Structure formats: structure tokens, C-alpha cells
Amino acid sequence: MESLLQYCESDSQRRIVTACIKHGNNTTAAKELDMNLRSLQRTLATVRKNAAKRGWSPEHNMTRTVPEGFVAKGVSTLYDQEGNVRVQWVKSSMSQEDQAEEIKRALAEFLKDHERKSRQYLSLKRRKKIKN
Image (cartoon, rainbow, N blue to C red; front, top):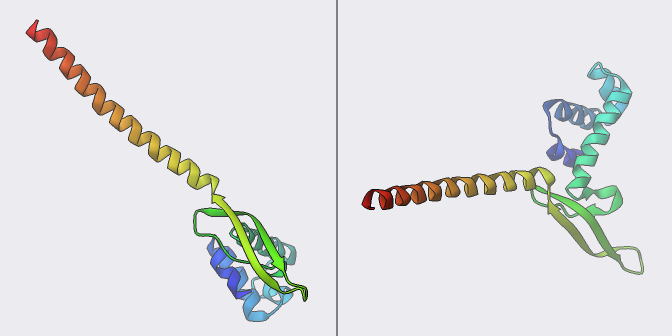
């Protein structure tokens, strides 16, 4: 449960996960936080989903995470005859949010460069008119 703390995206999620760690069960944690048990469970499910997107879901033998800004697209695991994990591959890609930011950055850079070149072109064109 402690490993889930790094996948919390808000103070509220951190508070709930911390209470569950402290009390060892959801019912007691919900009572201490003065919240509905189902709400607490939904928040934990959200945090677990965030962790799984990054490749962390030990109950499913997913223990290789991907870097910040990436999401795990899939995990392939090779087991030996005794059922032990021998090798694990994590297939990842850049998250959609980071892809969008990268596209915005590239577009802004392109437009800035285009604007600079347009000014240079217009300046050259004016100089040619003045000479003629």
C-alpha cells in the first residue's frame, strides 16, 4: 500500500492512502477521515489505476514502471515452469498530455521561426523596392 503514495495526484488521495496504511483497513480509515467507505474505495481504485498506467500493479505481477510522462501500453511476462517471473517487458508510449505539450512546443517554435523569416523576407523585399 505504501508504494501507492507515489501515484497519488492530489493531497486528498495522499491523505486517504496514508490513513489506510496507518489503520491497516479501509473501514477504520474511512471512519477516521469521516468519509463514506465507498468514496474511500473509489479513491483507492483511482490511485491503483494511476499506478497501473505507469506499470505498477504487483497483484498482477506488473512491477516495472515507466518514466514520468509515459504510460504503460502493455506488459509481457515470461514465467518459468514453477510459475516464477523470469523476464518482463513493459511496452510504453508518451502520455497523450505530454504528446500534446510536445506538439504545442514544436508548433510555437515553428511559428516563431516562420515569423522571423517572414520579417527578413519583407525587409529584403523593401530594400529591393527602394533600390529600384
